[in-house]
Length: 248
Image: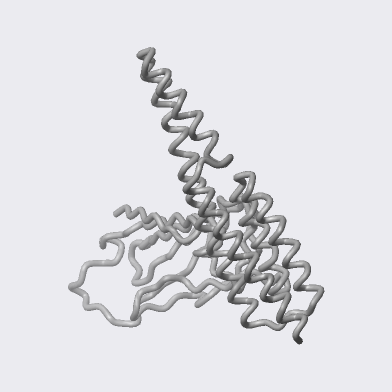
């Protein structure tokens, strides 16, 4: 037990060192920001030559690189937090502990050369190993990039509607199998009440259909559902950040 406790302490120390290193990546002139620096220098050069179009292009490239870095850092920190949580909840043996240390060293090496995205992927591999490959326990809103669309259709002459859900995995990692319940409002029911989703590969597109119906009754003088307002909503998930688009 003393040996395991010592190794677990080394794991915590290594992951904290990795987190500190990533902060250095953000705050200092590191390799991950080298391309951004070059883009900014190019923009200054083009501005001095009055080539505004090329200057704008260089600035856009720099902004895109910074956004990607910000997302990668967020992804890495959440993966580290999940790793810490799993280590507290699960008793590991010495072999598992040594494998985790090796993985942390790989992640640290990637972070040192500015590849924060690959460092985050290495940590997620460790998390996957700890939970036995059952990634369905990972919250996809925190650990995945995907797009979720919700739309409604109201066939004429009926008192029920159709809820259309579309899930697109536009991230680099497969989304695990999971169970999805349709987002119906209180007082409404859906058929089916839930569905089991398969693994969705990167670039995968999964359309779903649910029949929805109000549990209340409507009088003859009420406006038919087919003439009521229909709202389409899109949710773009980026490792914990959510962009919502609503169209009526």
